[in-house]
Image 1: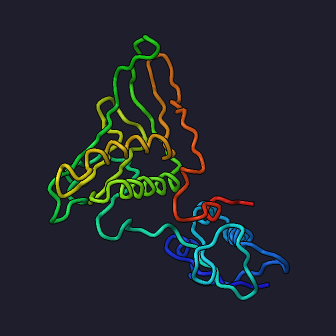
Image 2: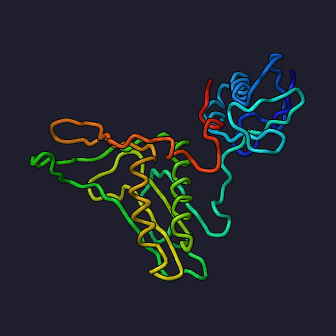
Length: 250
């Protein structure tokens, strides 16, 4: 059978075309089969294709949804722009965070308050009652998924605090020295009592749970990756979509 495939944004650029035809074996074929056929044709697209949302004949589709001969299957990244009303910024930055610039990006004419959380590299920590000295940290991220999960954190913030206006989530990557900013989460609102404080606190706590970023502590006597304890569950998958449509590789 043959299906028509539409590609958008990064996928379109990687394929060098926004339309193509895929040939699949006859029989029962699914969105997952179509995704894997696309990856076989464009192996360099694998990470983006696996993270892409799927639609069949202009309707969101999950991994196990059946595709038929002549169907139109679209693959595209999560739609940018969040709520579409207020600004959002999601970045993995290898340069120092410019707080004032980010605040400007998430404020609108109706903004009267901005709450900013900024994480820092500590030079000293206590572990089991023992003082540990840190020379520097090294951060790495699973970039495509980290950015998607930052968007999910913002969506969860908006669901809980609908009066929040702009949202910025910026995570530093690479080598960071003592005193450097590691992360910034900022939320704006019309007034200080409209959720910006609570939203920023929720944002950093949630980021530590579901955004795939890791740090290595480099000390005078050695180095070690710092691993967390939180194990994501099905409840941590992005709402509104059957997540099999973006993660199933069968």
